[in-house]
Amino acid sequence: MINSIDKPEQKALLNIENLSVNYGAIRALSTINLVIYEGEVVTLIGANGAGKSTLLKSISRLVNPKAGKILYQGQEITHLRADQMVKIGVAHSPEGRRVLSRQTVLDNLLLGAYARRDRLGIKSDLERQFIIFPRLAERRQQLAGTLSGGEQQMLAIARAVMSKPKLLLLDEPSLGLAPQVVREIFTVIRQLNEEDVTILLVEQNAGLALQNATRGYVLEAGEMVLTGDAQNLLKDERIRQAYLG
Image (cartoon, rainbow, N blue to C red; front, side):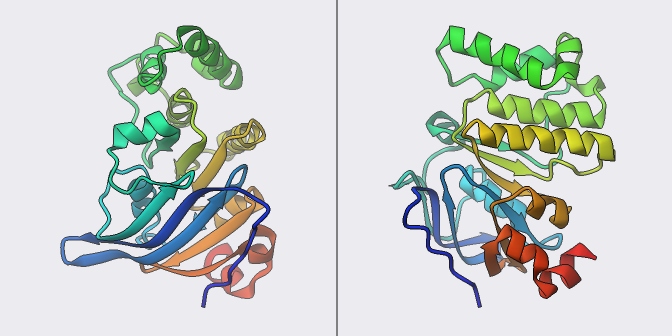
């Protein structure tokens, strides 16, 4: 049974209502309900194949739901295209980084701002990304495909942030990275949140995710089975046994 949290004093940025997703005859998500309030870091935890990435793809409109609704700032966006989602303030940094390997670091970042028309703002945000990620500044003319895994992850996040999102979807930002790089990535995640970016985080390291989140949701086999304050979930014996080792 799902524990509910009512936060009437906060403004909901995203509401997901009874969302179901099929891949052919296979049900990937079943009647998912989720809410994210402005200014939060919310994490999705669960085993591989639980449906976490599918849920992020549904929100960013890379996957079409079978049923249910997605509301963003009170408006239904279930049938928008992926490019329209970027324009209204939703950015997705996908699992596997997906940088444009034959383009330079600079070109990748500029492509992240493709929907914007404020040239001065783009220039300012570009320099801001180079301050946040000094290694990207050093490699701005280097082909993205020649970067290390950690540098590519930094680039993937910076590219998403270049669209000036209100809601940032991060899918497995620490996957395959060295501990020092993971610490750097999570320092940036906290910094972005402090700068009023709301974040929905999928992360293989459940302990690290909950330590940096406001609230958490637990997915099992495409169903939401538990939600609660992140610190309470860290102490929950079921979570500890299943995901924290």
